[in-house]
Image 1 (cartoon, helix red, strand yellow):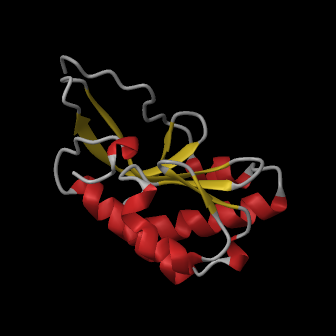
Image 2 (cartoon, helix red, strand yellow):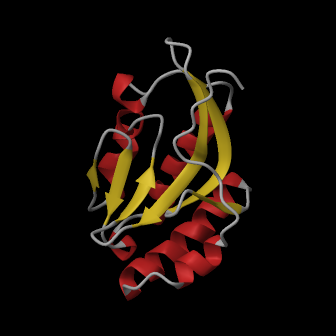
Length: 150
């Protein structure tokens, strides 16, 4: 598609094998939990988006500049310091739920979780479901840093 400039693409790698190979036991446990939670919430199979993101579903975006692309509509990555849950609609869209989540930190479109045993998984499920619904409703036009509202 003209103007389509994906930075990351879907791969044929097995997401379950990727999760099984996570070196740190706590991260692996949390990745297994996130894999099941996101598969349940999105009703989509997990797929690898790039080398280290487990993604579910897909959304397309078009910016005012005309640039278009695609990305995982829900996803996570088990990083060394924390598991990252991607909220491409922006964390501000989930401020109320995040206040009830438990220990976490955030970036513009990222939720960092060091130990899922310390957070309310029901609230996390609520956040993932709301973000996924927003992103898959149509073509999404704003970056998380632009306010996260379509």
